[in-house]
Amino acid sequence: MSEARAPLRRSRSDRVVGGVCGGLGEFFGIKPLWFRIAFVILGIPGGLPGIFPYVVLWLIVPEEGSE
Image (cartoon, rainbow, N blue to C red; front, side, top):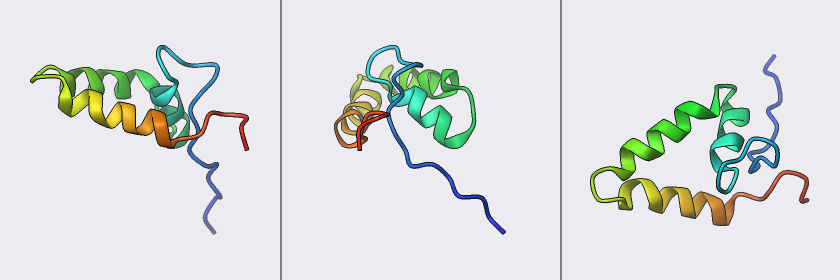
């Protein structure tokens, strides 16, 4: 059948600012570098398209280890 996936959490070990990209990378099984690049590219045309989703995820996604 399908494999159960761990819930989305902000990473404590692979973090640069808030651990959002590290957590997304662990959740989707890809390198967090790709999410970091995506947020930077989205932030280039004025900042808001990249910064706003990052901050929202930072606020709503719980940190790894917190239950």
